[in-house]
Image: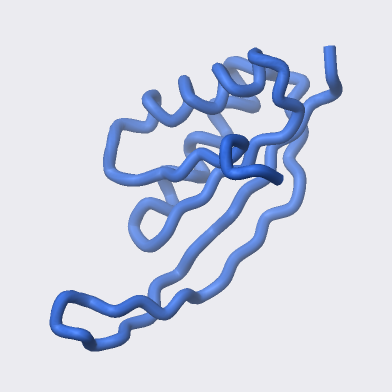
Length: 93
């Protein structure tokens, strides 16, 4: 999976990320990965479900990977943050 097939979910509204995923999949990319960390995880799940249920109904849910990442804050203290990666795919048109 190349870096262009990845949608990183952050603090923007859910529909911004839905549009990004739908645009990629309608542009001929057969598999898109949705990635998020921390509080954005629920937003990433929403993105995947909205894409599958409203826009690209033939999109299939692939693997879902969860993990814990260690990050350094501004003071140099390491903290653990949860992360998720959701794979959506569809057959080529």
